[in-house]
Length: 96
Image (cartoon, rainbow, N blue to C red; front, side, top):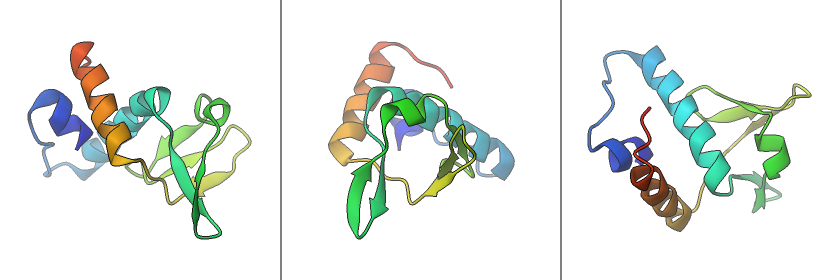
């Protein structure tokens, strides 16, 4: 959704590893702009920005690995935040 919103084109589905890497890059850019959440005890829990600055997105942005080696899955964003990130990235003429 972010890639299309910023570039106006869809990702090439013929290269899954390239898609996963691109999604990881997109998530890294977005994580600087808006909160990223995981689910804890059935409720959304914001991942601390200080954790995200050193974490690495993996598996097409389905999870992150923290600097300490802890993997966090079940990542999510709010739709309003996604739309805000798209607006900022478009205005900045960000390229992936």
